[in-house]
Amino acid sequence: MKWRLHGGLNRKALLGGEQAGQAVVWVAVMLPLFLSVVGLAADGGIVFSARRELQNVADSAARAGAMQVDQQVYRASSGATVVLDLAGARQVAAQYVASQGPEMVAAIAADSRQVVVQVGREVPTSFLRLVGIDAVHVTATASAGVRYGVESGNP
Image (cartoon, rainbow, N blue to C red; front, top):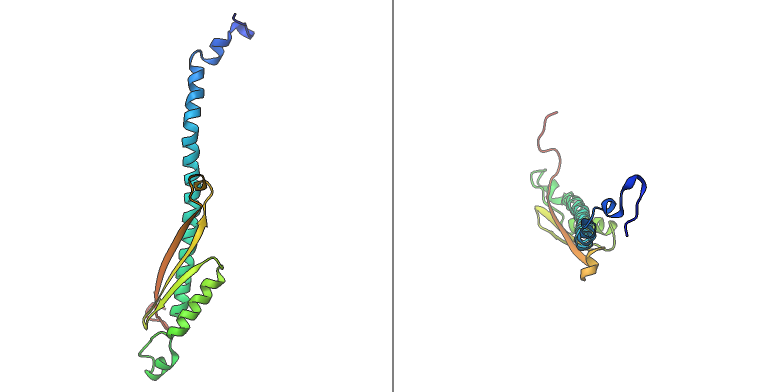
C-alpha cells in the first residue's frame, strides 16, 4: 500500500529509499565516539587551563621569593655581593602560593642564588568520570634568580 503525498511523491521516495535506515544505524554507532571526543576535548581544555594558572602562580611566587635580598651581606659588600635571604625567600613564596588558594600544594627550595617553586593541585574532571578518572593532578615548576637594581639597558 503506497500513499500519495502532494505532488505525486510517495513515502519511499521522500525518505531516500533503503538508505534511511543506514543513516540511523550510522548515527547510533558514531554518537558515542563523537561524545567521547567532545568530552576529552572539554576535560583537556580544563586541565590545560589549570596548568597555565599554576604556571603563573609558580612564576610569581618564585619572583617574589627572589626579591628577598639579604640586606646585611649586600651592604657589607658595598653592593658587590647579592645573595638571597633564604628564610625570607621561602616565607614570601609560600605566602604568595597560600594567597592563591587553599587547594594548592607547594614545594619551595632556595639557595643563595635562586628560588625554585613547584606548585600542584587536583583538577576535577567532567567526562572522564565516566571511565573512573575523577581528577587529574597538575603541577608547574618555576625558578627565579636573585636580582637587585638595574643590571643593563638603555635610557
